[in-house]
Image (cartoon, rainbow, N blue to C red; front, side, top):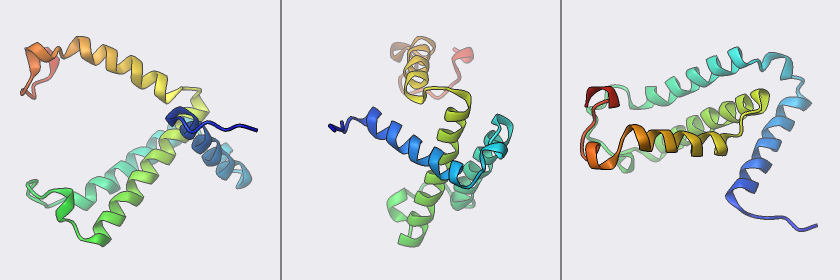
Length: 123
């Protein structure tokens, strides 16, 4: 059997692995959209907590190896819950992202917003 190593194929394989992890533990009954969005929010907050109380000027490279590892673990937790949410809801994350980027390109034309941080409704 031939396997492809495209990013989409890797993502699909990883999503399948995440789904299998849940299935063998019989966690699907808990993985409702509500619960998964709550878990996703919690994990994103845990990622933010690592950077809490920094002045914001420090870059990622300045973190200790232990903090960098903690960041990587929290990124993985966010990603895992997002992939489970996509599986449960049937959302294709690549397709959704491509569509959203097109919408954002229309909302935030580079010729208007380059170098600015305002929301599209403010310009």
